[in-house]
Length: 116
Image (cartoon, rainbow, N blue to C red):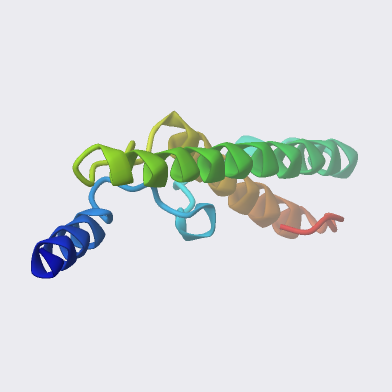
């Protein structure tokens, strides 16, 4: 009986990694063309940057929440979780926009204030 419990536990632990979501910090930015921001003034770039930072935090929190639900599901549903969804896609795109905006700001001599 003890061997059976250990086997079931080991199987659940092994399967618990199936279809779990990517941690927000590990989601890579999409490729976004910096020329989209090239015609903005420095003030407009700063405003856009602040909005993107807020969006990034919002999507990261949603992805973190999805990961928590996914881990919970993996325990009860034969090791399968939710995986990545639109939260991860939005986060990757927002991160890409931040990189593009930082590049455009650097090319225009604008300094952006905020922490990515």
